[in-house]
Image 1 (cartoon, rainbow over the protein chains, first blue to last red):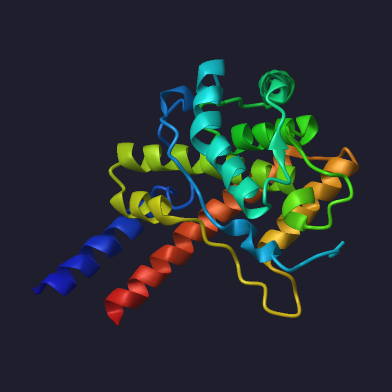
Image 2 (cartoon, rainbow over the protein chains, first blue to last red):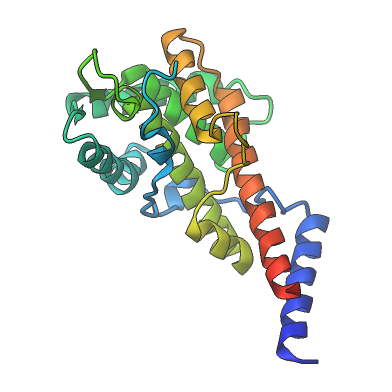
Length: 56
Length: 190
């Protein structure tokens, strides 16, 4: 098995496992928000507004 | 969420975003510092009255509702001041952008932590990059524009729905993970 196949197998098994456990879009870990460190998060989402004046 | 946690999020996610909006609008928007404490108070009030009513209040697990409560508190408090006659949407939607960005940032931080705990390196890597949104082909407007508009209208109509917005955050997170996984698979299969 070459490296590419190994990667595919690993990914597929992870995805299958996630689907079976219903983790694919939800997290079952009992983590309190107070135990979580905020991760800096910047983006340019509002770029979709540039040039769009009086759009209401 | 404890007060200390709220201020940690405020410093790491909200303040840089405000600075970013200011930069893009040539300082047309500014933060009313005295309102930051009010956001926390509003959050605590909403959190108590809304989350305690849930039949199965597993608060520490439900990042989407916590994030939605925070967005609601921010929309109500409107910490960013701007000229009322502003025509630039980046200016007059500044509070909505901040509410959306902040709630997503909170969901992201928690989800990355969960993925780390579950040793789910794929989800961890996906969310460390960015969120993905469903495409809205022309002539429809950008997906984010719809979000900003609905937040704006819910603000002026005093009709922000915490549960509905929590669901939007959940769907954005789900869409991002599924879409990114599909892209990874496509890449691997070439």
